[in-house]
Image (tube, rainbow, N blue to C red; front, side, top):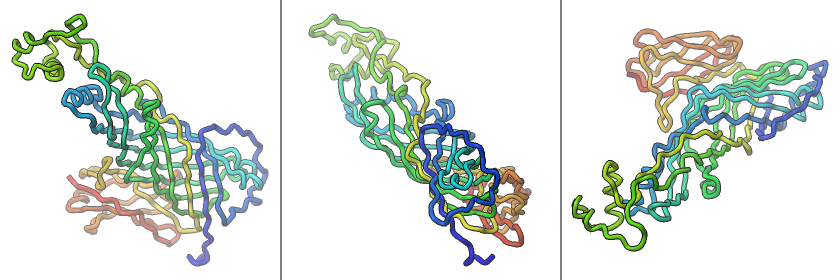
Length: 396
């Protein structure tokens, strides 16, 4: 079939928080299912990951804010990083429109495996007293790296599936307004989606689209103990004369902030004021509490196939993936496609055939990456060829 004769298909997926509980007997025949040319709305429920799967590392915010306060600062930047190399996601999926032809489309699932990294810098404000610092958030910006392979599976008569990748390497914006009430931040970002294969009612379809996502990151534990306390203290109310302490340790000028700064830097010395910072607690609660307001829009068409490089991946905030001479190339693509990965210098890294699960691994030839700055996969299926996007690399 010529490209001009290919029919476009447009699908919209909207994840929701509530888990669907419909149990419906599939239609006895898949022949009645007709994929409409206009948008299709899928409702998706993704189960939030646990804290262990996406725990943010914000360093030691307690010491950061204590030292900033002692230095007379009223604002400070805090950098948090979330990294997970093998995050598994599960959930449910349904399509009420397709269910009019086969009610099995009301009972489906989504599974995904993601390499996900997030790094964001928060503008923070400091108020209160030295012994009771109050923290506010004024801004949030950062970068997200996300590479997921996913499958939507339905319980229609043909057991239809759509599979592909979700990919993002770009900026992230956040809403700091929720931080004041519950020490959480709301993130929103949009990823690219590529459909590499379809089965059942979606047989022969490939395509691309976008996935607008949102999530809430709970930072309550990181800021739970941002206050002073636990140190030795002196004085019993009223005005206390610290001149002798200042003379003994040569502290000038002899003011509270100078004394506190000296004591923080010399915790083994008995200090006349409370200054020992508490450590930030290790998080125990779930990190991503919700996954609402997400939307996936796909444009599908009958085509030869599609392939994507899913590994290696750059580090968060970077555009190049570091490779060694033994680094393998992971592909997600249309089953049975024969793929060759080559560098921009013309060297062949290696070849592989995509298996029935839609995946392939290419093992590099000796010195294949030497002098190269990028790699790309070219695949052939049914005498038609298609290529992946270009992955920039930094060879070691």
